[in-house]
Image 1 (cartoon, rainbow, N blue to C red):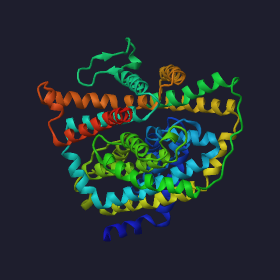
Image 2: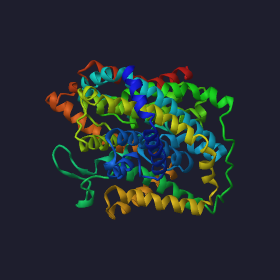
Image 3: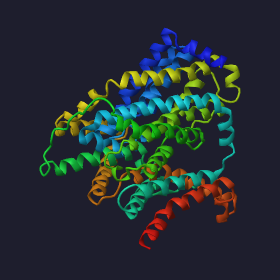
Image 4: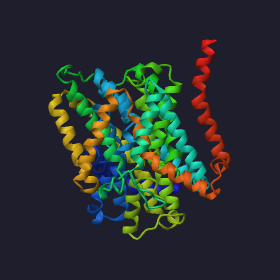
Length: 490
């Protein structure tokens, strides 16, 4: 606690407060752009910090990280266009809320969710960092594969009106994830001889293509049949009914997000999917999910923010970056000649505790700056749809091109956009496809590692207590609705 108070003394100096505020504002502004998430924002701003002392630079990076995550959820809610992969889940219920005139409430629920998740996650970072890091080191390939199977099962069973459509969407995503070089053998898969596809298709291009381009094409196809109606901005505050429904998801989200963020194969994608599945299972308003349930925004957003704090556990205590942002921040540490690891808290205690304290400060700044702006952001919905979606397509193209600087990525972007249009036409949920692209390659790698360790025996996938427990949860998740349906018939 003494070191944490010293960290607050460092973070609350005028210079460091200004850097935290600049980081939050820049992160939010860049996170709003489709495809340009917090990782790219930190990477772009890395040269800007060369003249700063290390503590100030990392305080600014932390603000960019949290601001970028919130900025990504803003366009996800208002325009059905995630700014980065962790904001994908926010579109499921956030966008229907915005279309029904409750965009300001959805943004407020997201902002408070980020605040609660950030505060709880950072508190857990202070208290549990060594313990969680030790547990993460003990997990092996079978355990990571089991976690990913759980994510696949959860997202395909709770989304859409049909499980078959959910599985079909997941298979589309897994197929897209196969494109490129086999990581273990170097063989080309589904590249059709194209060198541009040898590195695979970046998940940002897939997410922006399926959501932004697919949505734009869908709107364009129906614009004459369904003329645009003005969407009301709505009241800029949460009512009592909203607060009663949102406070439990706000508190549950960090308990899911923080442990997953700390895992070496973690990040915000898996826990946000699982948080959405959990909230749908527990809610009394299941029929509203997918149509504008506030729980579907509050829980995943709190989860995403807490997972960001969990990500710093592995990076600071083990030197393992579990997300793209953490990888860029690790490069920044090395730029200053600092090596994250078990000795970091002893050798660079002022920097580390100043960084942790700045996470609390940045979380408060994020709420103070963005909660009053929620109605202003919601006014984006009043822009005429032809202009709005033209702008979305422009920024989608900028985001896709910025990934690798290749014109071929723009062709891939629009090809995936056509796939997104077809999926909407036949009622396939988009989210399982995104999950398949994100986790498919990692799941394949972990499965093959586990099978190599067991000489090809399938028992190698279930040879730990942790993996067996996870598969039991998967079986319950898949079979329970069938059992419940059979009981209702009898």
